[in-house]
Length: 359
Image (cartoon, rainbow, N blue to C red; front, side, top):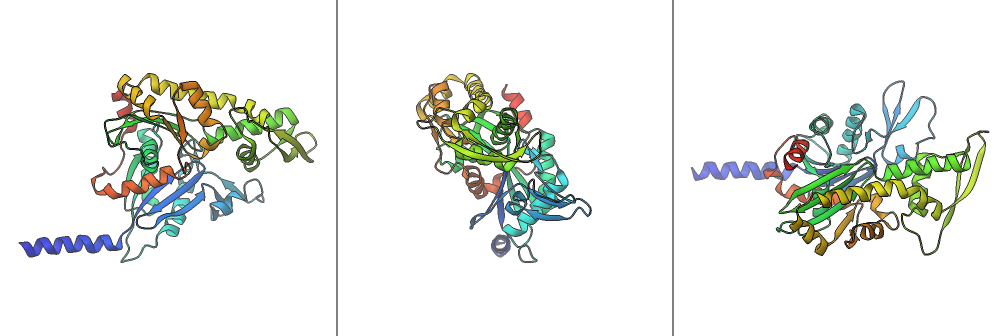
């Protein structure tokens, strides 16, 4: 009897030595993959370049992103995810296949990995199943889901294991997730499809309306990063923006300053603030009291827009701080969750149903 138990444990240990578990932050703007024991091994833009005639994937990640707006007629560079969920299933599968191979080499002795994937709080059960199916088709053995704000809190090293409320505002590329966490779970959450991409779109619309100039996604994102702000800067900054004249089609350039962009950002920033206030209003008084003491933690790439922490502090009256590495909080938290993957439930976690039950 003891021999059989020892043999069983040895087989389990032997199998675990050769297998690798992966954590995946499947974002609208970037895909990050965490390999157990190695850390973050993949950090690539969520962009795929495809030959339209053959359907063959030519480039993935940063190489494909550099092709946005620069491809010949038979090649299209596209983002297969929109607003935090999969919009093109086939391209997402092909992208994940390449990135999984980059993260880990599978073989007879190194089988398909188990994968933990982050999903937005506002995801539906159908969207959950789409993510799971895409990962399975791309080469995952088993798929587990975790809410993005929960992963962000873990990655930001917040002490959410106690009966003490903490609020996380994760502003990514396609969605902003707002959640109140306590006892290693989400007590209240909400998600709005306003995030980094929405700020980029507002910039592109403004440049066309004000200057009659058309700019691409990459240029709009550079403007957001370099001079974007949601609060007045002590010293306004400006930059030269190059694009195409909407009337003549000829090259054109204009100088754009940060105060202009602040005005442009007012609408999307207000939507994020309103979502935070909505979550606070629907949270129990005890947890709100905890949040008032602990403060609000900002994570996600778009949380780095200048003045975002100040704006939320001003509008909520609660101290707001940005995590040390906001871009990577979600993937590091996802990596931490690999430690208890054996206790996680495989398949959909029915976030929509849980949300209805909480209400």
